[in-house]
Image (cartoon, rainbow over all chains, first blue to last red; front, side, top):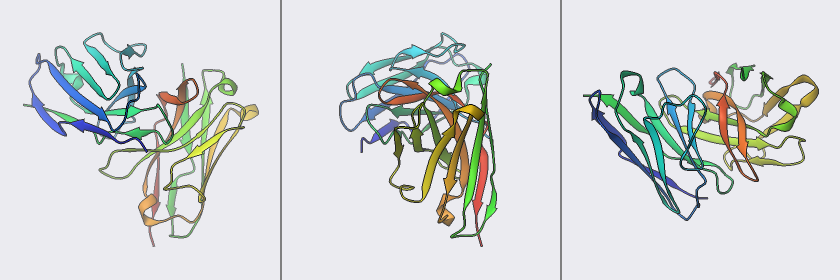
Length: 107
Length: 120
C-alpha cells in the first residue's frame, strides 16, 4: 500500500496568515493527490483533485502543487471559516489512502 | 444539487451484521463509481470500498475484506454496504462518497455520514 504522510499534524495561525501543509507519498503517485477539509461534526468537503485542480465552489485562496511524492496545500490568506482539519489522499492505486490530517487552529 | 443520504446505522453487538444504504439524487447515479469511507471517533479518514458504475469491479480495504460487501442498485439510485462479523473497532461514522476520475477514483461529493456503534 502507498503510505501518505502529512506535516505538520497541527498548526496555529491567525486570520490573514499564509498556511502551507505538506503531504508526502511513500512512492511516486504522479498527480493523483486530493485534498479535503473537515470541520468538527461535519462530513469532509472535497477541495482539490489531481494535485492542483480546485473543485467547484472552492475559494481561490486555496491552491495545491506538487507531483511525484511531495505535495503542498496552501491557503494564501486564512479566513475564519478555514479553521478545520485537512486531509490529503492518494488515488494512484487501491487501496486509497489518506494522510493523518493537519488540524489548523486559531492562534 | 448532488445529495447523498446514508441510513441504516445504529448499535450492534460484536459479531453482528448491519446493512448501510446511501440514496443518491441530483446526478446520474448509474454512470458514477461510488465509495464508502469511515471515520472512527477522534480518528482520521479510512477508505473502505469502491464499486464501479455497472458493479463489475469492486475494491476493498484489507481491514474489511471478506466481512463487508459493497453493492448498488442503479434503478433505485442506491448504494449499499453489507457489514458482517462486526468488531468493536468497526465503530465509526460511515460516509458514502461519489467517485471522480478514471481507472482509480478519488472523491468529489460526500454524504453526511451515519454512525455505527459496535458494542456489547
